[in-house]
Length: 104
Image (tube, rainbow, N blue to C red; front, side, top):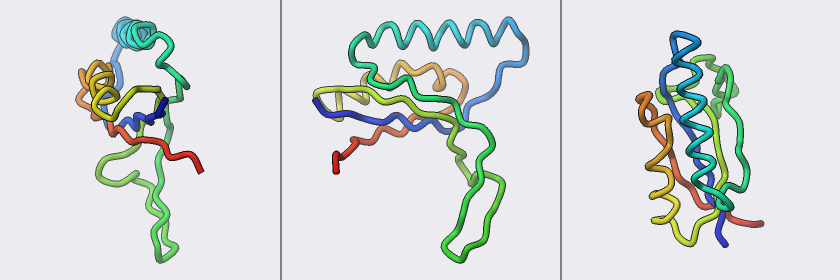
C-alpha cells in the first residue's frame, strides 16, 4: 500500500498547560482513529534553518516553516488527503502538505 508523508507547516503553540493537554489529546485521538494506517507517528520539529544554493544559511525557516511530520498508508492520494483533513494542526492555523513517498 502506498505511503504518504504529512509535512506540517505553521500552527500556533498552546499558551497554557491546559491548552497543551487539549492539543495533545486531539493528536492522540487522531492517531488512534487512523488505526493501522499510521505507519510512523513522526515528530515535531524544533528550530528551522534553510541552506540556500549559494551556501548561505538563514535561520528564519522561510515563509512557511516546517513544524513536524507523520507517515501514513492509504489506498490513494485522495484517501491520504481525507485523513489529513482531520489533523489537529489545522485547528491551530497550520497546514498539511501531503506527498506520496517513492521507494527507491
